[in-house]
Amino acid sequence: MIEKARALIDMGMCDRCIGRFFSERGHGISNIDRGRALRTYIAMLDGSVPDYRDSCKLCGDAFENMEGKAELLTDASKEIEFSTFLIGSRFDSETLEKEKEIAEKLGLNGESIKVEFNRSLGKILEKKTEKAFSRETPDIEFLYDVRYDDVKIQINSVYIYGRYRKLVRGIPQTRWPCRYCHGKGCEHCNFTGKMYPESVEELVAHEFMEELGGKEHAFHGMGREDIDARMLGNGRPFVLEIKEPKRRSFDIKDMEKRVNRFASGKVEVSGLRLSSKEEIREIKASRAEKTYVVTVVFGSEVEEEKLKNALKMLETDIEQRTPKRVAHRRADKVRKRRALSVKLLQSDGRQASIEVRAEAGLYIKELMHGDEGRTNPSLSAALGVKCAVESLDVMGIDSKEE
Ligand SMILES: [Zn+2]
Ligand SMILES: [Zn+2]
Figure 1 (cartoon, rainbow, N blue to C red):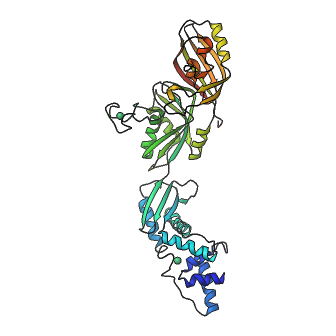
Figure 2 (cartoon, rainbow, N blue to C red):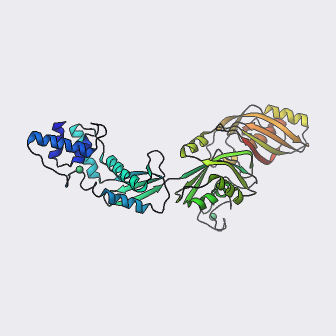
Figure 3 (cartoon, protein in one colour):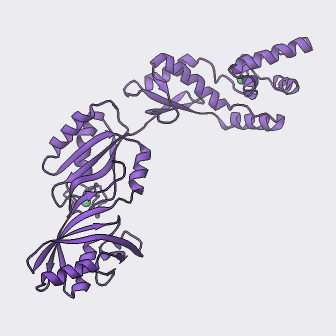
């Protein structure tokens, strides 16, 4: 260790940098104290050693005026509400390469200059602001550019979990950019940039955007219903993401009321609570079973007994080739999904109302009309009669988390 420390001293390094190369030695000692102890010891062995405290050949003046640097961070973040933060930094590549070279050459495995810089600055900022350093879920992330004393801030999203019910048909789940202008605004979309004036996403996000001063929003649903299908029953789980919010404290119960007032008659939310990025992954991966009510109009009169028998035949594994109506955006393949129960609710011979309970991913409309033979079996094929779907509603989604 002494030989290596002597080599670092000869390279013209400050106590902090010397100590950092030995950061694994001695728990709870600061890098400066480590370096100072080594330099002092070597001075006692050798008679004297050079002192590079003010003109280090590795860190330069990176650690000078840390208070001033922390001040730059508080200035840059004064308009933003946050309680936890993370600090990252940029050094010039020469410094980082030099550090790596020395460590390799001397066989040392200390802390990197970036890690020490970020931690030191973080400690000062914690004292100054009474906010907490957080590695896992920081509200904001500072990026300090040591080369230019420049600060950039990344504001992390706020996530809200809930369930929504869509009470009317004709509203897509998420914003749907105009297919002619791709969102810029044109005559086709009446210069809104959208295919539909409203979406569940926008109806749910509006009040949160206002309250939190967000820049954008995203909506992550546990699957989605067709635009012309209602979402009833216990509602569909979702996570709303508000991106780059200026504020992040709010009363969730109050927000739930505000959303329901704003979206009144169209969309209803319940069980709102704070969520996380991880939960989006869980929601997206969910294979929850779903219950639907579908109304079908027959091409010719169908007797109730015959209809009931046909429905029984559908309670099995259904082979579905990607439906024609979604083929332009989904890969063309055959998938197998189970229809768990198919029950007749009501019929008058010309039309019927049917309840279907199925595994996630089964296309219900195609199960009825058969999609020109692409779905097997189907009600249409089982009856030998054309079946047109008049309406479809999602009545319930089983999700494991409740
Ligand atoms: Zn140094
Ligand atoms: Zn357009």
